[in-house]
Image: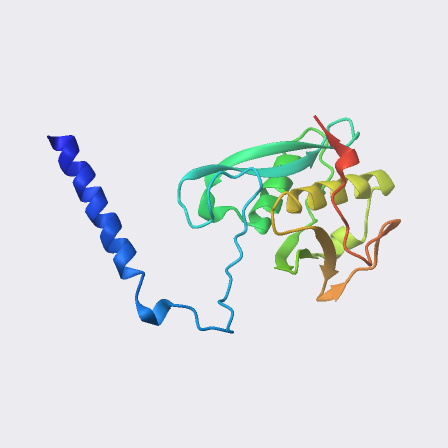
Length: 186
């Protein structure tokens, strides 16, 4: 009997919610497009950004042997899964390794996404590319693969002091850097 009342209550709430959303003021106007809200979640997340349930946020860190990057995850609330949060988790995880690739002076200031391209505002320490080509390659692979694990990001541009960075170390970054699948290790 108690189960029957619960089912009936849920059904009534569902009907009320449906009826509340069906007013004439909410019907689309012909010829006008409705604004679309873009969600920013990892491909591996199981829920939308508006949920408070725990999901796995995906990021990539350089391997200890320098052969590439490996996927890691951290449990977090779905509404906290953002590109910047993923990069900060990546930095924290890398710096906890015995041989970190990102020096402590490297900072990620912001991440903005527009038309499938993430613009990452980095500080001058990152642009200076200390450590050589392998270090820069691993840093870029970690950042780019972390960001392209989001459904709405296909490439990454690097920005410093509000200006696009065309080269980092020996790498051309004048065009968006695409996912580096060849550097992902299992």
